[in-house]
Image (tube, rainbow, N blue to C red; front, top):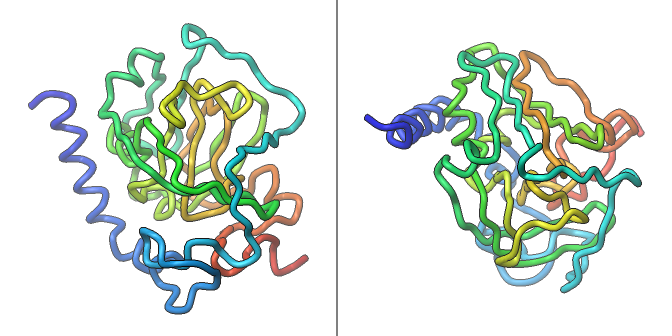
Length: 230
Protein backbone atom coordinates (compact mmCIF):
# COMPACT_ATOMS: atom_id res chain seq x y z
CA UNK A 1 0.00 0.00 0.00
CA UNK A 2 1.54 3.34 -1.05
CA UNK A 3 1.38 6.60 0.92
CA UNK A 4 -1.69 7.91 -0.90
CA UNK A 5 -3.61 4.68 -0.29
CA UNK A 6 -2.70 4.82 3.40
CA UNK A 7 -3.96 8.40 3.66
CA UNK A 8 -7.23 7.48 1.94
CA UNK A 9 -7.75 4.54 4.30
CA UNK A 10 -6.95 6.69 7.34
CA UNK A 11 -9.24 9.44 6.01
CA UNK A 12 -12.18 7.05 5.84
CA UNK A 13 -11.57 5.88 9.41
CA UNK A 14 -11.39 9.47 10.67
CA UNK A 15 -14.63 10.42 8.93
CA UNK A 16 -16.36 7.42 10.48
CA UNK A 17 -14.90 8.27 13.90
CA UNK A 18 -16.25 11.83 13.86
CA UNK A 19 -19.37 11.33 11.74
CA UNK A 20 -21.86 11.70 14.60
CA UNK A 21 -20.17 14.82 15.94
CA UNK A 22 -20.17 16.35 12.46
CA UNK A 23 -23.90 15.76 12.21
CA UNK A 24 -24.43 17.86 15.34
CA UNK A 25 -22.52 20.90 14.04
CA UNK A 26 -24.67 23.93 13.14
CA UNK A 27 -24.21 23.62 9.39
CA UNK A 28 -25.72 20.13 9.48
CA UNK A 29 -28.09 20.38 12.44
CA UNK A 30 -29.68 23.80 11.80
CA UNK A 31 -33.20 23.18 10.44
CA UNK A 32 -33.92 26.90 9.85
CA UNK A 33 -30.74 28.66 8.66
CA UNK A 34 -31.11 32.39 8.18
CA UNK A 35 -30.25 34.18 4.96
CA UNK A 36 -31.39 35.12 1.47
CA UNK A 37 -31.21 33.82 -2.07
CA UNK A 38 -31.55 30.38 -3.62
CA UNK A 39 -30.40 27.28 -1.79
CA UNK A 40 -26.65 26.81 -1.95
CA UNK A 41 -24.63 23.60 -2.39
CA UNK A 42 -25.15 22.77 1.30
CA UNK A 43 -28.91 23.25 1.30
CA UNK A 44 -28.77 26.64 3.04
CA UNK A 45 -29.65 30.11 1.77
CA UNK A 46 -26.97 31.38 -0.60
CA UNK A 47 -26.18 34.50 1.44
CA UNK A 48 -26.05 34.15 5.23
CA UNK A 49 -27.97 36.65 7.31
CA UNK A 50 -26.38 40.13 7.29
CA UNK A 51 -24.07 39.45 4.33
CA UNK A 52 -23.83 41.06 0.87
CA UNK A 53 -22.24 39.56 -2.23
CA UNK A 54 -19.11 41.08 -3.76
CA UNK A 55 -17.01 40.16 -6.78
CA UNK A 56 -13.96 41.79 -5.20
CA UNK A 57 -11.77 40.12 -2.59
CA UNK A 58 -11.01 42.69 0.13
CA UNK A 59 -7.74 42.35 2.03
CA UNK A 60 -7.84 42.11 5.83
CA UNK A 61 -4.95 41.19 8.12
CA UNK A 62 -3.09 42.24 11.27
CA UNK A 63 -1.08 44.85 9.37
CA UNK A 64 1.90 42.60 8.61
CA UNK A 65 2.25 40.38 5.55
CA UNK A 66 5.02 37.81 6.04
CA UNK A 67 6.79 37.04 2.78
CA UNK A 68 7.52 33.31 2.98
CA UNK A 69 8.97 31.72 -0.13
CA UNK A 70 8.09 28.16 -1.04
CA UNK A 71 11.67 27.15 -0.25
CA UNK A 72 11.41 28.57 3.27
CA UNK A 73 7.85 27.55 3.98
CA UNK A 74 7.28 24.79 6.53
CA UNK A 75 4.07 23.35 7.93
CA UNK A 76 4.31 21.90 11.42
CA UNK A 77 1.56 19.50 12.51
CA UNK A 78 1.85 18.34 16.09
CA UNK A 79 0.20 18.16 19.50
CA UNK A 80 -2.20 15.32 20.28
CA UNK A 81 -1.17 13.18 17.30
CA UNK A 82 0.56 9.85 16.82
CA UNK A 83 2.88 10.99 14.03
CA UNK A 84 3.89 14.67 14.19
CA UNK A 85 5.41 15.97 10.97
CA UNK A 86 7.14 18.97 9.45
CA UNK A 87 6.23 19.34 5.79
CA UNK A 88 8.32 21.17 3.22
CA UNK A 89 6.69 22.52 0.07
CA UNK A 90 7.48 19.41 -1.96
CA UNK A 91 6.05 17.18 0.79
CA UNK A 92 2.85 19.23 0.87
CA UNK A 93 2.43 19.14 -2.90
CA UNK A 94 3.01 15.38 -2.95
CA UNK A 95 -0.08 14.82 -0.78
CA UNK A 96 -3.49 14.18 -2.40
CA UNK A 97 -4.58 17.44 -4.04
CA UNK A 98 -8.20 18.60 -4.03
CA UNK A 99 -9.97 21.01 -6.40
CA UNK A 100 -13.13 22.53 -4.96
CA UNK A 101 -15.50 25.47 -5.36
CA UNK A 102 -16.88 27.12 -2.24
CA UNK A 103 -17.97 30.44 -0.79
CA UNK A 104 -16.03 32.81 1.43
CA UNK A 105 -17.93 34.69 4.17
CA UNK A 106 -16.15 37.52 6.00
CA UNK A 107 -17.45 38.67 9.37
CA UNK A 108 -17.26 42.27 8.08
CA UNK A 109 -20.45 41.39 6.13
CA UNK A 110 -19.19 40.61 2.61
CA UNK A 111 -19.30 37.25 0.87
CA UNK A 112 -17.41 36.13 -2.22
CA UNK A 113 -19.20 33.32 -3.98
CA UNK A 114 -18.12 30.30 -6.02
CA UNK A 115 -14.37 30.65 -5.56
CA UNK A 116 -12.33 27.88 -7.23
CA UNK A 117 -9.61 26.55 -4.94
CA UNK A 118 -6.87 23.94 -5.07
CA UNK A 119 -5.07 22.53 -2.07
CA UNK A 120 -4.97 19.77 0.52
CA UNK A 121 -7.87 18.75 2.72
CA UNK A 122 -7.21 19.22 6.41
CA UNK A 123 -8.84 15.82 6.73
CA UNK A 124 -5.97 14.32 4.71
CA UNK A 125 -3.38 16.08 6.84
CA UNK A 126 -5.09 14.68 9.92
CA UNK A 127 -5.04 11.25 8.32
CA UNK A 128 -1.29 11.66 7.87
CA UNK A 129 -0.59 12.47 11.54
CA UNK A 130 -3.35 10.37 13.16
CA UNK A 131 -5.03 12.40 15.95
CA UNK A 132 -5.06 10.67 19.32
CA UNK A 133 -8.35 9.83 21.04
CA UNK A 134 -7.63 12.81 23.32
CA UNK A 135 -7.71 15.31 20.42
CA UNK A 136 -10.81 17.53 20.49
CA UNK A 137 -9.72 20.83 18.94
CA UNK A 138 -7.24 22.41 16.57
CA UNK A 139 -5.30 25.64 16.90
CA UNK A 140 -3.98 27.25 13.71
CA UNK A 141 -0.82 29.36 14.01
CA UNK A 142 0.28 31.66 11.20
CA UNK A 143 3.57 33.22 10.16
CA UNK A 144 2.22 36.66 11.16
CA UNK A 145 1.52 35.33 14.73
CA UNK A 146 -2.25 35.10 14.08
CA UNK A 147 -4.08 32.21 15.73
CA UNK A 148 -7.59 30.77 15.51
CA UNK A 149 -9.30 27.64 16.79
CA UNK A 150 -11.70 24.98 15.52
CA UNK A 151 -13.37 21.95 16.99
CA UNK A 152 -12.02 18.85 15.32
CA UNK A 153 -15.45 17.98 13.89
CA UNK A 154 -15.50 21.33 12.05
CA UNK A 155 -11.89 21.04 10.95
CA UNK A 156 -12.34 17.62 9.36
CA UNK A 157 -15.19 18.59 7.04
CA UNK A 158 -14.22 17.84 3.44
CA UNK A 159 -14.33 21.47 2.23
CA UNK A 160 -11.87 22.72 4.88
CA UNK A 161 -8.70 23.06 2.82
CA UNK A 162 -5.18 24.37 3.03
CA UNK A 163 -5.14 26.13 -0.33
CA UNK A 164 -2.22 27.21 -2.50
CA UNK A 165 -4.36 28.23 -5.50
CA UNK A 166 -7.39 30.53 -5.81
CA UNK A 167 -9.15 31.63 -8.99
CA UNK A 168 -6.82 29.29 -10.94
CA UNK A 169 -3.71 31.22 -9.88
CA UNK A 170 -1.17 30.84 -7.06
CA UNK A 171 -2.52 32.33 -3.86
CA UNK A 172 -1.21 35.87 -3.53
CA UNK A 173 0.67 37.26 -0.55
CA UNK A 174 -2.27 39.59 0.25
CA UNK A 175 -4.63 36.67 0.61
CA UNK A 176 -2.32 34.43 2.62
CA UNK A 177 0.03 32.84 0.13
CA UNK A 178 1.80 30.56 -0.21
CA UNK A 179 -0.82 28.61 1.80
CA UNK A 180 -3.88 29.58 3.83
CA UNK A 181 -6.79 27.73 5.43
CA UNK A 182 -10.36 28.13 4.21
CA UNK A 183 -13.47 27.25 6.26
CA UNK A 184 -16.45 27.69 3.89
CA UNK A 185 -19.16 26.86 6.43
CA UNK A 186 -17.81 29.31 9.01
CA UNK A 187 -16.78 32.95 8.96
CA UNK A 188 -13.44 33.32 7.24
CA UNK A 189 -11.45 34.46 10.29
CA UNK A 190 -11.49 30.78 11.29
CA UNK A 191 -9.13 30.10 8.37
CA UNK A 192 -5.63 31.42 9.03
CA UNK A 193 -3.60 33.08 6.30
CA UNK A 194 0.12 32.23 5.93
CA UNK A 195 -0.40 28.99 7.82
CA UNK A 196 2.61 27.73 9.77
CA UNK A 197 1.41 25.23 12.38
CA UNK A 198 -1.60 23.04 13.07
CA UNK A 199 -1.72 21.92 16.68
CA UNK A 200 -4.15 19.22 17.78
CA UNK A 201 -5.30 19.91 21.33
CA UNK A 202 -7.01 17.98 24.11
CA UNK A 203 -9.09 21.04 25.03
CA UNK A 204 -10.23 24.25 23.38
CA UNK A 205 -7.88 27.24 23.19
CA UNK A 206 -9.20 30.57 21.89
CA UNK A 207 -7.31 32.33 19.12
CA UNK A 208 -6.61 36.00 18.37
CA UNK A 209 -10.16 37.16 17.62
CA UNK A 210 -11.85 34.71 19.99
CA UNK A 211 -9.85 36.25 22.85
CA UNK A 212 -11.20 39.64 21.76
CA UNK A 213 -14.88 38.77 21.93
CA UNK A 214 -15.57 37.06 18.62
CA UNK A 215 -17.67 33.92 18.55
CA UNK A 216 -16.03 30.58 19.17
CA UNK A 217 -18.39 28.84 16.73
CA UNK A 218 -18.62 31.50 13.97
CA UNK A 219 -21.65 30.09 12.14
CA UNK A 220 -22.76 32.61 9.45
CA UNK A 221 -26.37 31.42 9.02
CA UNK A 222 -27.12 32.45 12.62
CA UNK A 223 -25.30 35.80 12.54
CA UNK A 224 -22.89 34.21 14.99
CA UNK A 225 -20.27 36.95 14.97
CA UNK A 226 -19.58 37.67 18.65
CA UNK A 227 -19.55 35.67 21.86
CA UNK A 228 -22.74 35.69 23.92
CA UNK A 229 -20.82 37.10 26.88
CA UNK A 230 -20.23 40.28 24.85
